[in-house]
Each structure stands twice: as C-alpha cells, then as structure tokens.
Image (cartoon, rainbow, N blue to C red; front, side, top):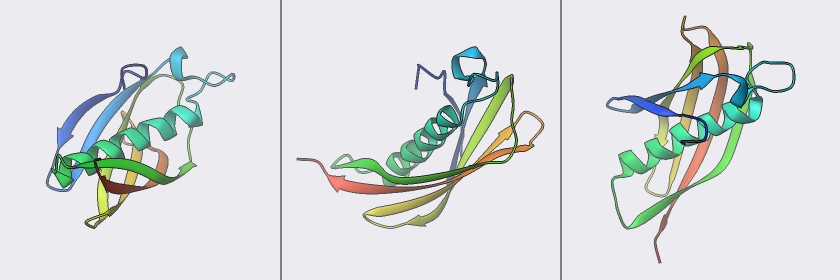
Length: 120
C-alpha cells in the first residue's frame, strides 16, 4: 500500500473508501493513470474490506478474481475507491469497487471476489 501511497479515509456499515494520488509513479507511458495501478487500488480496498468485515483472526483473505473496466482517464490529482459489499458469505465475499476522481466522475468499476481461508 505504501508503494502506491494508498490511504484509507472512511469506513461505513458495509463499505470502505481509500484514496490514491495520481502522479508519475502510477502513470502509463501516455501520462495517464495505469490500469494496473487502478486494479491494484481496487484489490487493496476490497481485500482490506473483506478482512475488516469478517473480523476473524483465524482466517486469511485472498483475492481470487478481479475484473476492472476503465471508462475515463485521469493524469493528476486523486482517485477514490469505494468498496461496497455485494455478498458477504462465510468463505466467499464479492465487492463492487467504484473508482472516481475528485469531482466524483467515474474512472473505473471493478468487481473483486475474495476467499476466506483458515490459517494453518
């Protein structure tokens, strides 16, 4: 999380929000936010949300699938990722992650599936 300077900003009843600066550390060659950095942001907020809401120290959380659709580019400022629970099962969780800019314009949408496994 420190590599991408991701910072958690809000925790709600069924969501978590974080923000990430958009700068040359996360640009692709054309000078806009790299899709891989966006996917890493989405998986980070969704995985942390699963771990937080499961609230069980005997399990670990693993991301098992992520899909990300990029709808708008951004070259500077901040993006905000809001992970909202779609399904909170005992072993599988599904999150919708909406990534927006500072004006609440949609940048990307992601869906993350996580799996909770017992620690050995």
